[in-house]
Image (cartoon, rainbow, N blue to C red):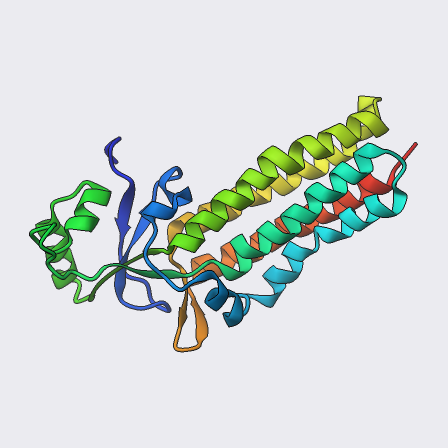
Length: 251
């Protein structure tokens, strides 16, 4: 993919409809401005989660947060608790509620573009005529899908929460509570096992990031995206267990 492109075009799905879809680059998938225009946040929350199991695994980060609050031996406990409560909010938004994909380009000619699929062409670095030809040859729907704006923004917020709030907060607690690094090896090991599963589940998500859609009052999900969801739930549960044990273990 050329360096200036912001995504690639994927072939139509099965469960989610016969529409070509865009997979944004690892950078572009975090920006509100790149996403398709979808429903507002309140509407997406009213729909309910894409999977209840996913929602439970997300809010589960409140468990180690409550343990820290219950122990409350020092400032590090309060900092860790607040950080984990933050991710117990950002994670459901990112993984359970704001996961929809909508029409990014309907193929209509706009005066500003001058030709159909100009927006998609600019995004993926391809000639709009090439896009039209592929849609016709595959007898796909004329609309091209992409993750919607809240999908992108909630991903940015959740990942930023994990990297800039949770990680340093937990590290501060660990150094304050267990300065002997050998006593932290089991928890470091648990984190890397969980991270390995997360790395794998993201591979499945990138097969088709538009693999789940809210259509006619229900969620439709592609097989690859369902595998991603289940693995992502496992990643959450391993982290929850690891963080809870870390909060309890005070030699």
